[in-house]
Image (tube, rainbow, N blue to C red; front, side, top):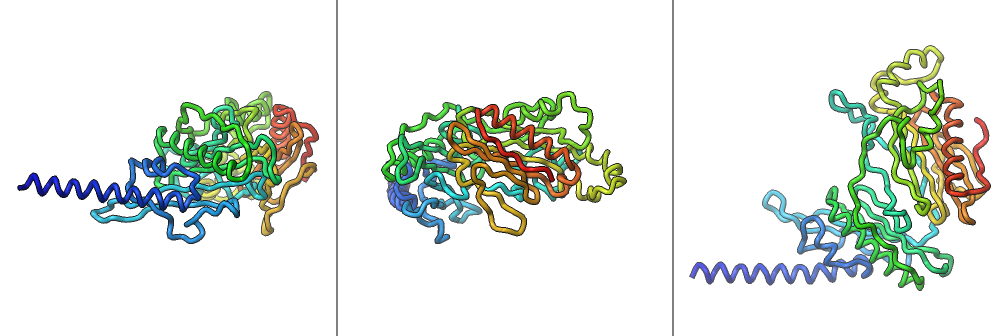
Length: 390
């Protein structure tokens, strides 16, 4: 009798799970405009039977008619003996070029400022989030800790649209290597479907076989590689280095990649050693606690082609403004330049930490020129326009 009862409950549980999964498939397809593989979404985070749309109205349904738009899904989980609904997955779709796809903003800080490190650690030792890294040769897109972005390029533009991008994000925490590959597959499917729906013929991008977790630790600046290798060359043979960043973290570079970024920082102990000299010169270097709450750093942002078109700069106390070909300038803690690469736009930007621009003085322009010139030369760009002197 016990076996019969147990078997009945097991059968009922299986039926209920099957029913939940069927309802979830329908909910996922409706919420994400039928752009994703519902089963692949449910397999994330160890597998979920009950997945549905977010209760937030603006994220509840992806409307293909008003891109960019997104859908966010929640999943039922057991927590402390109770069933709760927690954020599970997000999909965002863009039709490129798009105004404001990228905004160069100094408030986008690479370090967890204000969090005092453990004994023996420096706040500038590690970035708070891994830097976006090219997928393979960079044609397919990029990936970071929780998001994979795939671009499907149109064989010819349709109504001004040259490509479609889909970004799949694990909202439950850091995904495993296997789950990152699943996110890449989900995003690729969504990008290709979006392109087809937009009347755009595409050659689906190939995905790399591995998407390893990116490192977050900065290393010695003179040994910088990848997207920061220009800075190692800049330092070579220089005598006046004490105010310049002495740490760097870059990503692999590819001539096909649409974006690159590099983070440079001044070690907190190095900063402490020059603090007295800075104050004697009248430079506002901040107090002791400022070394932890406001680390000194520089970050570069290079955008090419569709990534550059519509890139904006976030001015101080003003609305974001677009950067067009032939434009360059500086605004508060941002410097930017423009160029043309194989007939497509390129934007080269740099942001700096609060007060660090004052500490560097004219050296900041030297660093920016070295970065922008190397990036433009390496990518075969012409017509590089740099900001004028301060």
